[in-house]
Length: 481
Image (cartoon, rainbow, N blue to C red; front, top):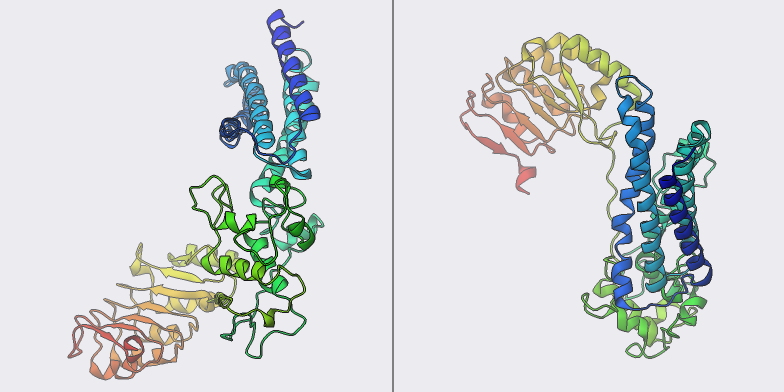
């Protein structure tokens, strides 16, 4: 039987849920902005919403832990945490409605997120009553509630970061397993001409319009996150030319031929502290070049058919960022071999970064006496993955240096305080990617480093405490250039 207190609280919850339901049905978000106080209070929604999420995730942990005799008392606290989560969900839903209703939001994505929040409030309320009535049904409903929590949170994430935020970086295999389409690739415009509208040396094709080539990408990058078919803030959509020209709740935002009289241009040129400044909500502002492009587009008639070659004065397109080439192959298929070598040889093979094609660092500092010429020979299966070899104070000799000369991707090599001599280091000129070499406290002399001085890729060569007449750090011609 349920206690009177539990029934009373359940009754209050039902009344509040019905109140929220009436708000969503009779006063849904309509794209209009309202009192600033309402917007201020509503903006606490992103802050409050994480509290009930954390509490709801804690409930099954407490319930499961309570199954054991040792942690049985924790199960009693699960009911209290669930009650707090219920209050938190209802508070978050109320603030979410207030934010959307007063902040000028509208669209299918906004609606889905709000109905998901209300459904979650109903679900946790049902969990509260079932927990004291039927444990088995309660467990099933709690599991379904967590699934609903995930879906509603996903909708909120899409509102904030865009619809592809969760799937954009999804691994290809997982994407194929879930049968999701490949992510859309942004086409990088070509550059190379000083012509304002040019996209290559010869200029763009006559069919390329200024709107498509220069204006639409700005809207896509800076504006569409809040002004699209799923999230129409201020009833304005900027993902389609027709809708751009149609305007929003305040009427048209673009007046062809009149930049200063266009609401869109006014807002993007306001001070960032102004409440009407766009983009809002702390999102990146348009650059001076992007603002100039918008101004030229409006001044030239705000057309979607005007060829790009006919617009003069636009700033050149930014050069595409250079693509970083992989330093080595992917080390992940070799993890089993890497682990075995580390265990047998007593060395460490550490990833250089989180990028699996940035190669490995060979480290021996924990046990330098275990690394010798024979150990380097044993490392040949992964030699092409090593970009940095830290071999200071090891037992490596000239024979080991000849092995190192086959480590084709080696960029940094520390042989300080080893037995290498001038007779052996000459073979290091075969390393076409070597940038840094430390020969401190070795038997190397001027004859040994003569060839290394002119190694085209070598930027730093350390010969402190050697037989060289220049006991200092030598910089190659490549470094000086």
